[in-house]
Amino acid sequence: MMKYSDKAVMKAVAICYKPYLKPEEAMIYCNLGRTQLAKKCEEYGIFKNNNGYYKKEDLDLILSAAPTKYDDAAKKLKL
Image (cartoon, rainbow, N blue to C red; front, side, top):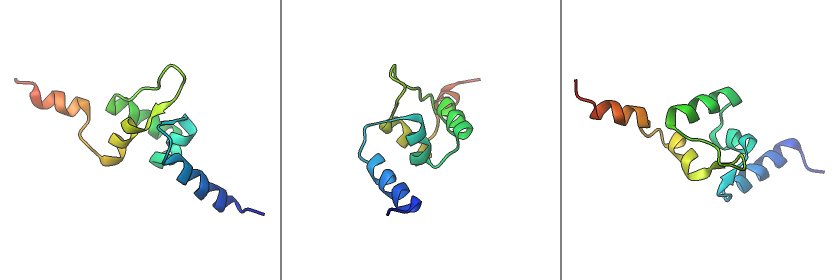
């Protein structure tokens, strides 16, 4: 019989090979809670597609700690 931790590890490995992730899978992939994921996605300008899935390449921006779109726009703004 498989333990809960074994199932979690297998699911995490499977998530790494999927191009689109459900919100629950995105939370596991980014290691964030639901509200934290929503905040980060808003901050980085990441949205779900019409089917309700996140694109994994977009979520990689959160994991890489790249500057947000707002930070880039603020740098280009001249006062």
